[in-house]
Each structure stands twice: as C-alpha cells, then as structure tokens.
Image 1 (cartoon, rainbow, N blue to C red):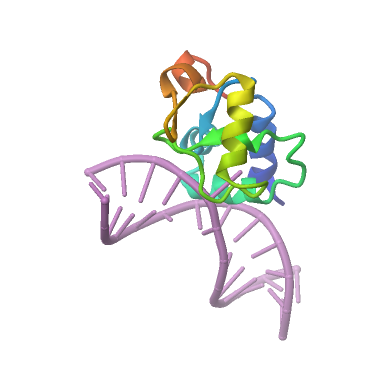
Image 2 (image 1 turned 90 degrees about the horizontal axis):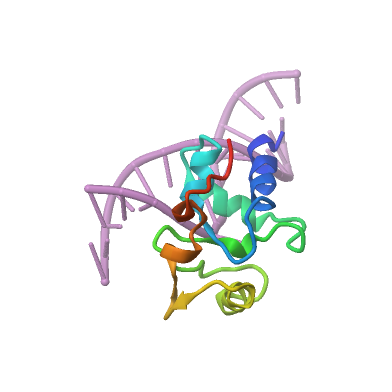
Length: 107
DNA sequence: ATTAAGGCATGAA
DNA sequence: GTTCATGCCTTAA
C-alpha cells in the first residue's frame, strides 16, 4: 500500500539543497499521470524535517498556496535560505530547477 | 474478504 | 487570465 506515496517521499530526499523540482517532474519520474496526486502526497508528509517538501514548486516556478508548514511565505524563506533565487513570487527556474540543470530525479 | 465514495499543495490549452 | 481534466490513497460498511 502507499506504494507511490512512499516513492514520492523517496524522491524528495534526492532533491539537492538550493534546488527545486516541480510536481510534474515527480509524477513523471514515478510514471504517474497525476501531478495533483504528488501534491496530495506531500500534504501527507509525515516527516517534513526529513522530506524537503518545500523544494517542490509549480511548473511555472510559483509556490503552492497551501504549504502545510506555515504558508508559502515560510516555504519561500526556506528556499532562499538554501540559496534558491526568487524573482518576485516565482523561483528562478533557470538556476534552481533541478531538471533544468540536466539532473534527473530517478525512476 | 470486497466494494464504494471522497479528497487534493497541478498542468496544459 | 481562465477553464477543463486527471490519479492515487484513505476510510467505512
């Protein structure tokens, strides 16, 4: 049970500090067809300290509006604290998107 | 043991 | 900027 769920959390630990990935990337990495579900699973994050769910952003670089650990403001601070670059309300996908760096998550 | 319905932090045209 | 469509898991009877 929670087969995919567990896999998603596993991928979260593979996200390097200062970088971000999109829900679509994760869903694709797991061969899933529902990026929505990825977000749903992140909400079930049993250990936010172990799974950097704050490094997951929208496909356009924006943050989620319902970050379950203090709001997107906290999420943004965490990312900036790690070295991620923000442009207004968006993340710099050219420099912070892991996939944009030629690095793949893993399947 | 099986079946049923609901809920969700997205993506793309 | 807005709208439409999707999948997987959880709990109950």
